[in-house]
Length: 199
Image (cartoon, rainbow, N blue to C red; front, side):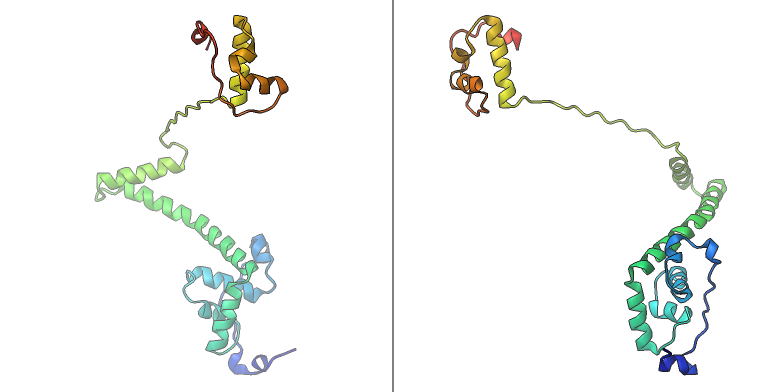
């Protein structure tokens, strides 16, 4: 149903933002409902997000300044519009990469640029073309046995020495026989000669 604003010629605006052919749009832009939303996205991206009300007007939306402010704010908080802004921004940055590359190459070739700045520019190119410097990290992992593993080792050592593990381990040995987990500290009973060599 047409609103009063639609009928009032003062509020009629033409879109001043050109919309690319639908085939050239990304999925997020295609997901928007109207060309005016797409125009709003393009206007926001091209002006760097500085003035949503102006982008709203350039997209051909109508309304006084207060209406434009409120509606532009509403559009900016629409998830689909935000996705389209992100998609369009990435597309623009991809196109600008060629200009940035040409600028860096010109900088390296310019005799008036300091060697230090040329070196930084050369590093940027190398890092972005897979020829970056390599770094090496050494990580040492030390595994510490838990209580049950310590008891199992002590039992194995006791058996090798011909000692009854229960005598060697005391309360921990009794719990071990039952298969129970234990926090009991093991205390060596009797001679521990030769155990150090086995550990």
